[in-house]
Amino acid sequence: MQLRDFFSLDAIKLDLAAETKDEALKELVGLLGLDDKSQGILFKMLKRRENLGSTGIGRRIAIPHCRSLVVNRLRVAFGRKPGGIDFDAIDRKSVQHIFLIVAPPLEVSNQYLPVLGRIAQFGKEPDVPERLSEIESPEQFLALLEEKGV
Amino acid sequence: MHPQLELLLEIQDLQAQRRALAQDPLAEMEEEVFELSPAQALRVLDEKIEELADRLDGSISARWREVSSSLGRAVAPVLNGVCYGCFVAVPTAWSSESDRNERIHVCDQCGRFLYYLD
Image 1 (tube, rainbow over the protein chains, first blue to last red):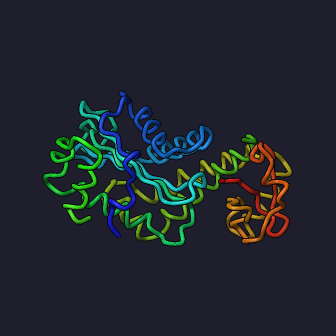
Image 2: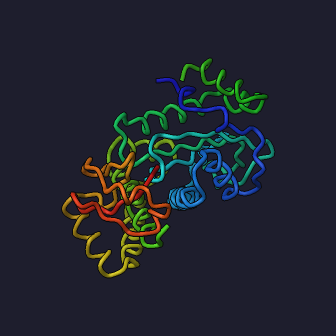
């Protein structure tokens, strides 16, 4: 399993318009191509997870995640906000790189946890935040995932 | 979407979060990576699930409680005309309705509430 296999180019946005955490979550959910009602339900679930505790893991990275019936397979998206967004992150710093992970409640292949773990592992690599800031295209984002072997 | 179906989906999604968080691999990761207290999060989720369940209408609430206690998950997605709770085909007439999630449908076979995904 390689992380890059889960990302489609149209679910990678390097210039998020969002200025707030809520706007960022909505914008990322919007990249998944769901209908409006499903997007609303998914946003609500992500908010509920954030209310339990922020998914901003520090080093400018956040990994909002949840399970929801509105998706029929594991979906991921990546968004970048160069100026940063207040995400109530663990280290209190603003977040620039956001990985969204959503999975159905029941998955035959059970990929949710491994994908979440790999993205967390990727985010902990010392040079990753800087490298993510430097990429100029969705293709370069996928190449970085591949280079890091996650 | 029918407001009660939306509520049922929300409850089921929260239950899915709860189930995942009650299991070791995710609980450990939530604690280590996200500094979340699983025990505290479970309490919050339980309260929220109960709060939302109280908003279900009488007959829907009764079915939800009955099916939840007997089958675990009270809502099943429908994909390609099949209930993914019991894997039995649902009436084709329902699948062709343009507003199928605007009504509350129940699987004839397993009794779960149905949510059309495709």
